[in-house]
Amino acid sequence: MLAIALSLAAASSFALSSMLISSVSTRMGLFQLARWQMSIAFALTATASIAIGGWRGLTLTQFGLLSASSASGIMLASTTFFATIYVTGPRVTAMFFALASPFALLLGYLFLGETINATQGLGIAMIVAGILFAVAMPEKTADAPPRRVPLLGVALGLITAIGQAGGSLFARPAMASGVDPFTAMAIRSGLGVAFYILLMAFPFARAARLPGPRAMRDVSLSALFGMFLGMSLMMAALSYGEVGIVTTLSSMTPILILPMIWATSRRAPGLWAWLGAILAVAGTAVISLAA
Image (cartoon, rainbow, N blue to C red; front, side):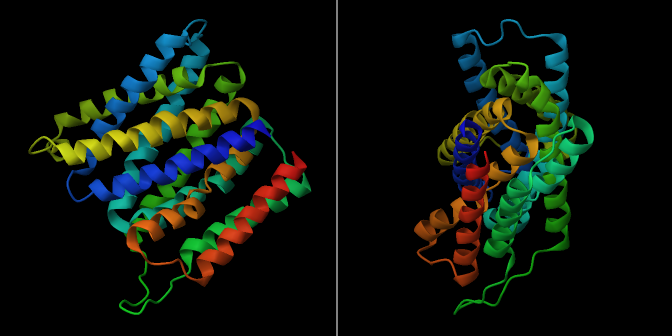
């Protein structure tokens, strides 16, 4: 049950972070956004790790696993995650993020020997179906036709899902061995910062000017909710739960983002969105009862 609660809390944090990233996407370049967000996340998680002494007892094996997790889940998946938001917006991006769950299930089975029972499998299928209903079905509004997702957005979204699943796969053994969640995220985000700084050697990754105060506020908040809280909660969930279930539950972001979009756009979600939300919540209940 603790893994379920932590995973759902992570999903809520990811949803809020996605909204903040979307709001700043027109004011900052992709790599500038990634560099600033990761730097702020590293400062927050490293400070928390030092404050509680979480780095004590860290082994070379654990560091290696978390480094691999950073390469897949941060350097690759975070870059394509931001790019997908730029191309498709936060709602569709959340759908692709949710597709990390079937990839995580497959990888967990192949490499960690993790299995799920029939009831848990039913719950996961309900959640994935609910997410797809909520955000994949085009809904026509009074002032705009249904919008199709560009092929570039599809490609970036799939890379994000696979990269996120790989990041969870590598992190699972390290977290199960007792690594502190803040320390894990400090390692992952710290290596991510180094990666994005090295990318500045190439002109395409450089920014023409520093971000303004409003943009920095939104980036700082997205780092606080997405990387510091969301990812740390997900790392904590991986300490107690299997990769497939944790990834599925933390992928509830598309459902949780619906009321946020409603609040900011003043436009209520359509029928498919509500049906998807109901199905996903029911799937979560099924997994909870099977835990």
